[in-house]
Image 1 (spheres, rainbow, N blue to C red):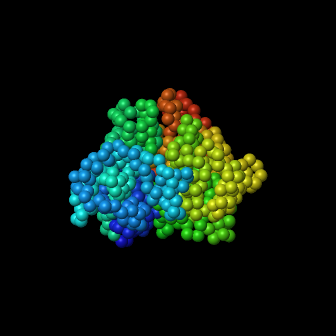
Image 2 (image 1 turned 120 degrees about the vertical axis):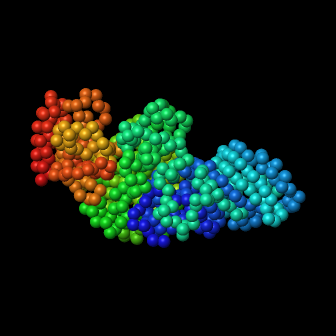
Image 3 (image 1 turned 45 degrees about the vertical axis):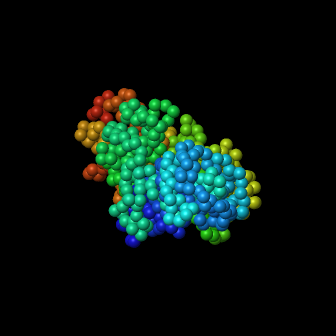
Amino acid sequence: MAAPEDQTSGLVVVDKEAGWTSHDVVARCRRAFGQRRVGHAGTLDPDATGVLLVGLGRATRLLRFLTALPKTYEAEAVLGTTTSTLDASGEVTGTFDMGRVSLADVRRAAESFTGPIEQVPPMVSAVKVGGRRLHALARQGMEVEREPRPVVIYRLEVDPGLTPGVFRIIVECSAGTYVRTLVADLGAALGGGAHLRNLRRTRVGSFSLDEARLVDELTPAVVLTPAQAMRDLEQVVVTPDVQRNVACGLALDRVPLGVVGHGPWGLVDEGHHLLAVYEATETDRIRPAVVVEAAGRGEGRLPIAEHARMDRSRTTRRYPSSMMEIVTLPADVPPPPGGSAVTIGAYDGVHLGHRALLTELSARAADAGLTTVVVTFDRHPASVVRPESAPQFLCDLDQKLELLGEAGVDRTVVVPFDTDRANETAEDFVESVLVRGLRSRLIVVGEDFHFGHGRKGNVALLRELGATSGFDVAGISLRGDGGTAGPAISSTRIRALVSEGRVEDAAVLLDRPHQVRGPVVTGDRRGGSELGFPTANVAVGGGICLPACGIYAGWYERPDGSRFASAISVGRRPTFYRDQAELLVEAHLLDFSGELYGEEARVCFVARLRDEFRFDSPEALVAQMERDVIASRSALG
């Protein structure tokens, strides 16, 4: 099956065949759709078949909302035999005479397992005990105590099978339910034992086998849009005035939207294109969990940055291609076969200090024949650990991935960072991500690196763990302005410079102008019609660090790679508005005419020209804008 020319972002419903791992399906989808960012929403065992939801491109960020959906299975319960894996793939561990057990007996026993129950996860599961996955312990012949976990069995139907002692079952259950455990517990309740066979998942939420396709049957025509992928969420249509706030990642009031309950909610525009998924807070506001599309953008299409990363034939000046592998669901991707050299961090901005460390990583990896891997996070850890004081960020995830690709990294692993991850011990993180997930042989980090719950992990702990887990650790002195001398280059320091409007100084440490991104949205149209200076109003995502209010010379970059010298305003337009709280980014493109609405803009700040101030009249403002255009041309050469 040939890869389509246009890469898509969406969801495919796969009918997984027996003998395939979930990872096998993901790998085939990568090849079929020409995508690296592919993941699934809930593993199916190799022997199991049925519905597997696979996300493509940016839609992989939506998969966590699908894993929580209820699931329906059909299977067979074989009475009289227990196995080491609780299913037909394991070795027989016990036999029981259960020939007198009737269908009525099984149905009565099944009633006791309907509703909320406590279930002990099987030893072959991925649940962690003492920082280690149960299946890893099972492979070593170990069995440990496991705490029962609450699950819900919504429906458990039992029908006679084709042979005596075999019963067909239909199970509708909550996420996290192990059907093999349910069958084993059912057998024990009947006074003997049982194991599972022929497991088939027939439904995940509203996604059923009716719309599922075998992997070899997948085509772009069966890809569901992000809005269709989120059809099991309550969807709220938002008006154009709210869409801009959504595009910027702002929190919203519940009452005007009419949302009730605990969420999450899919926010869509009038055309039912998914803009974002929002979650509840402890207040009357809801906050964005994932911002998918800005209003008016073509839903289902990858951002230009994604095309540039994955299409080697594309040659646009500012978006160089890269063969870096991007892993968004690290548990589903095997480690590099020869082992890896790993660095870990937020990598906000990928500045000169970061790049010096990446250069050291690459050099050491080359000497040892290792794959270079950056482990970073889908959001800044501070936004989860201390959201009230989380910093503004120098770049979003897409830009960070581009910059890491330009730095020559082989693989970037984007680890989901949530409250569970925030509470994970440093030891657990090392075992699950670095040792098992990446087969790390070398860790290269800054000498002041900290990680894990309470930031208790550091270089010393890494070295201690590496001595028993088989990896070396290099703690690197952070680069200063003059190489190793001078104050260390840090994201915090660069944020301060940008926030003060010192974009020239920030560019020195970034080795490029500070850039912000966002869709061009409709403003009040005053710039062109009244002032004669049309501007592109760029809706920058929430949480991104903006320069201080003022006028700047810089560049506006279009999706086709072309760029235009611009006079850029960051401010609140005090000449026309006295109480506008929101900062606006407006770029007047020099020597350009045409429509920009809806396209993804990249605005680069090269030099600060002046402060923002209020003028007594529009005519005075126009006169100053004419001087700003001349100053911008001069600053940009």
